[in-house]
Length: 128
Image 1 (tube, rainbow, N blue to C red):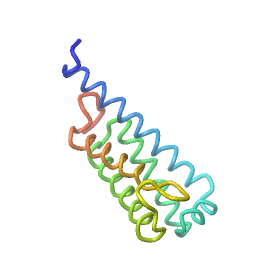
Image 2 (image 1 turned 90 degrees about the vertical axis):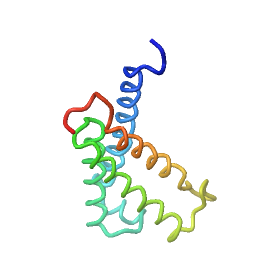
Image 3 (image 1 turned 120 degrees about the horizontal axis):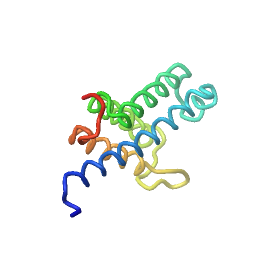
Image 4 (image 1 turned 90 degrees about the horizontal axis):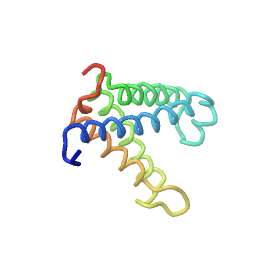
């Protein structure tokens, strides 16, 4: 099977979606597991941390399962843009980070979700 085949592309998009979904579902679960501690670590109110956790879990499940995939991917992009802006403007973190993690990780997730949204998730989705 040549690498340029539609089957390879669709399988690659499925694996990308599953990986992105796993990252966001686990991150969202960490927000929801202990929202008090998590809100202190990200310097946001507890209610916003719970909202963020629900958004990450819902978006991650949507992207992974292929349900309303473009809405889910764009929602996750918005969450990551918020994280990048917090790191740049509030915490003054560089691209690679100095004493902590930089915002290169969030940028990769933004671009992954952009590919997912632009491709509409590929052929292996449940509901567009």
